[in-house]
Length: 199
Length: 244
Image (cartoon, rainbow over all chains, first blue to last red; front, side):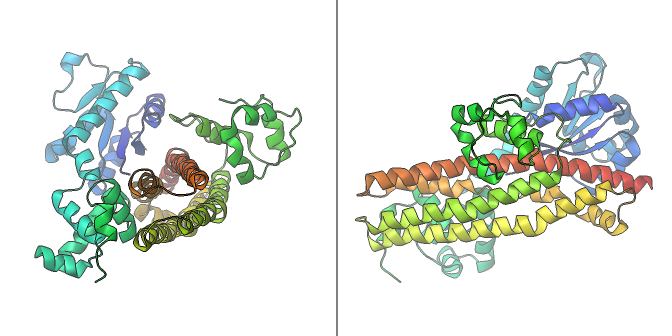
């Protein structure tokens, strides 16, 4: 199960720990790292990936260069600021005011996570593509990767890649597990699986 | 919810869902009027940790307590290991033998029987792989991490390793073991022809549902209690490394 990773960068210990607590109550989130100054944050972001960045106004201003060289980062940024809403930079994903209550902050974070899921994450992480369904079908009928490749005019290597993606999406590795999955999700009927002549 | 002051006997009688925990903590019945805290003390179990697990079991929307630092990761690891051995030595063998019994006395075709028993065999293998990876790689790493964090000067080797390895990688590819079991229940309920032995069929489904619930709670325990605490320790250690 993929979870949304958060980096928290702010000087205030209390603010940081407060936000960690809020995040811990939101399913599907995970705090990756906490920073209390800009230099370490920059160092980290050079090497590592994060889904979201919660950052205080002053650290945000300190690392402005980073956002210019990597604009996608803005879309991942949640600014923690006491500026009035109209003065908050419009380019960031969202902003949180330190005076806001737990419910409000939770609501904002959930909204961001939801909107992301709607776009791509959820569809790509759980649902199989038509091509993948075809492959699951053939696996359920007992075909080997090589036979599937021949049938679909693909290379064996491509079939193996598809099978890896399928396993990652479903969390099911074995052919027998995929067969049961295919039956209960109406990709194949139990008769097709059990009545085929032995090859 | 249960509290430390509550009588342990009452807690169990009111919440039978807690029963599986007693084997894992090796706590025997015969509580008399002892409180939850007293029983834990008598069995050398950290009461805070017991409460955390018990309440996680009772509450589906469980979120961990704000401050988890008052019990050691060693306690968590010990509990997880006991849970693993319950799955491998009790829960899975029981379901397996029930399924075989069910298939033996059924009108299913040979192919259908093969489908189910082959599935369960492969599932057991995947399960074992999952658990041995945790026990041989992840849990020892966590214990080592905790030990290093208690040192004033952590080993440089370990600090170096931290720059390339983190529990986060494990967290992100942490498979959910319950998915396939849910599919099996669905197969029995909706797709296979009816079984002769109704009693046994219901028992299998009930045991499957219980195991699914247990696996969900177990994965929550790993994802919401263990991993955040480990990430926190990793961060502290990295900080220590850069400070020195």
